[in-house]
Image (cartoon, rainbow, N blue to C red; front, side, top):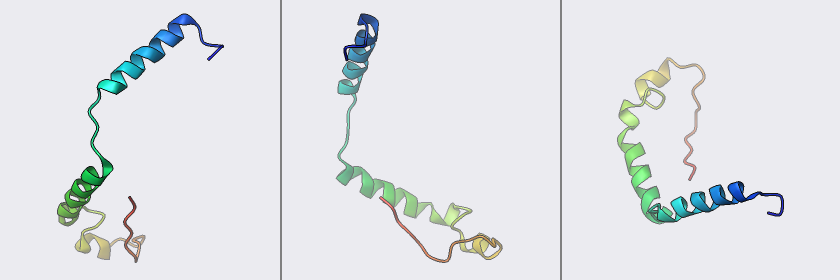
Length: 67
C-alpha cells in the first residue's frame, strides 16, 4: 500500500464502496437454483442431447457435475 498514490487509493475506496452495496446470495441457495436451471435445459442443449451425441465422435462417455 505504500506504493499507491492518493488517486489510486481513492479508486480503491470507491471500488470497495460499490462492492459493499452489491446484494449477495448464499451459495447454498443459488447452487440449487443453478443446478435446476441446467437440468431443465439438458434436452435443448446440443452438447448433451442424446440425438446429437450419437453423431459426435468426441463425446465424453461419463457424466460429471462440478460445483
